View 1 (cartoon, rainbow, N blue to C red):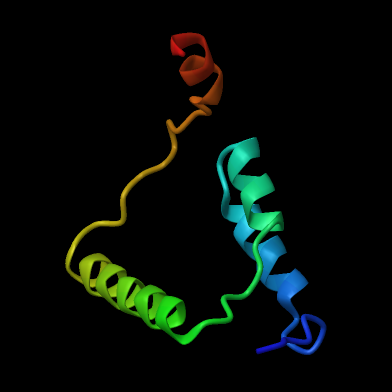
View 2 (view 1 turned 60 degrees about the vertical axis):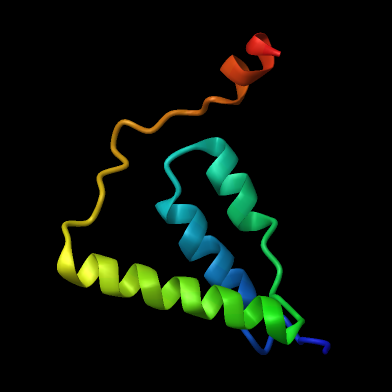
Length: 78
């Protein structure tokens, strides 16, 4: 399945996700996103999104204010 990323305005989605990211790695990951193309993966992610929506509806939203990049620490530990 091919997507026309312009028609989907996917760059706007990437930018929106990136704007919410708290770390450089998160922002980089957001800008690298591409749409899923196989049905099984799409269904899995829809299910995960539905689960997260139910969780957030019944619980407080988690705070990511203190999040920081851990990649340098992981590299040192290796």
